[in-house]
Amino acid sequence: MIHKKTRTYIPANLEIKWETLEPLYKDLRDRPITSVEELEHWLHDRSELEAALEEDFAWRYIRMTCDTNNEQLLQNFQYFATEIEPKTAPYSNELNKKLVNSPFVDRLDKHKYFVYLRGVKKSLELFREENIPIQTEIQVEQQKYQSISGSMSVHIGDKEYTLEQASVILKDTDRNKRQEAWEKITARRLQEKDKLNELFDHLRKLRHKVALNAGFENFRDYMFQALGRFDYTPQDCYAFHEAIELEIVPILREQAEQRKQALGVSQLRPWDMDVNTSGKPALKPFNTGAELIEKSIQCFRNINSYLGERLEIMKDNNLFDVESRKGKAPGGYNYPLSETGAPFIFMNSANTFRDLTTMVHEGGHAVHTFLTADLELNDFKHCPSEVAELASMSMELISMDNWNVFFDNEDDLKRAKRDQLVDVLKTLPWVAVVDQFQHWIYTNPDHTDAERYEAWLQIYEPFGAGFADWGGLEEAEANLWQKQLHIFEIPFYYIEYGMAQLGAIAVWKNYKENPERALQQYLDALKLGYTKTIKEIYETAGIKFDFSAGYVKELAAFVKAEIDKL
Image (cartoon, rainbow, N blue to C red; front, side, top):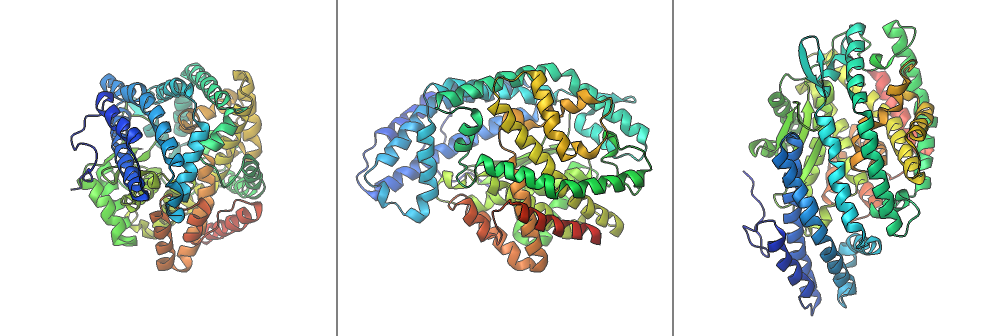
């Protein structure tokens, strides 16, 4: 069993409410600091308080997403968002000022604190008191997406399915069954189209106001600063989009043509894109959520005993919720518990191959959480997404050589690996579309719903539009963006998946050449947390932080060659 770290500053049984928190913030704000040693002690005390708050918030979020129908759990989450965060924000800003204005700040170890202090200074630049209530409202409003999505289900035959469960039928070899499932899932999503449009329009306006208050022309430019994107610009993102269109889309178009011929259809329709072209039933790597966890532990243990032990610890401490059920929020995540030093994995398993890849993805995040647990300051663990997603996406590929835990049959194992590598390439255009769409949304803040639909279609088409024929399904195509949780809840968090996917391919390429060295480089990079720049972390992993057309072409050629071997 694991336990929270022993507290040295805040009370062990501190109740998380403003009345108990405010004296601690006042102490930190008013405490005299007369030496660099006292400054570092102050940083540790602040870190301990912030870690306690983060873990409390984490559990409120986890419990709410596990049961979106429970009104009390929603209220518990909203209490933190409305009563605690708005009151801690001004104090956090005061503490940031206290730090950067300290006469001893320049005597802190520059190698150790450079990245952290850079982030603190950026937070000070962006902070506006008038944005606190707006950001609170955004926090509360965007969670409505979970409730709306979590309530969706469909009836197929005489059975009710969550959308995740129904999506399994899209892999059925019977085309009529696939079409029925796709149409019912799509119709159910479209029932909520207007509600989701209304929610998003409200969020968009609130976010634009935050940006204006902070002195930016638009929310895109604000978020590039707020996300700490010190290593690349919006122009680099556009260059990435172009590289994906140029180097990846032609490969996927060729594969789509092969799919059409293999299925013997005149046109690929959206319900034809997930079925295996071999004519064999969908891969089924496990039967229950418990079996998924056990097999994942064994898979990780076969790579490296340390990795398997981390998932074993999570299982022993009930840090998984993997089964899909009605009322549960969609998607999957790994949520770090800052004081405990372990994470919680949430997902919606429907006993599919996609669930296997989700588990090893989130398992990569989980390993990252464990590796950074003992870093000195809580902020050192706050990795940018470009690094966090490198951890997870690399694990998807590294783990493939041990998927025989899930597949006894050699042909099934080959199918699984091939499907995974095809998905690696398919990820990149979708990332480019979602990212470019968000650039458009927030640099055109006064757009209408109709203009947004049109923009989505214009962006989606050059990237293959899923490589299916959408004739007669234009409404469904125009609303595809609504299924992407990130657009509603974590704006601009998406390009990182593309950058990290390229990095993961490079890690895997190294792993195939020298498994022991590549795995050690990968783990060494993750141990850094966010104590080095993104480029330095990627270099530690033995790869480049690069998303130029030339690099994309090189890595795409490697993946295509590996697919051809299978």
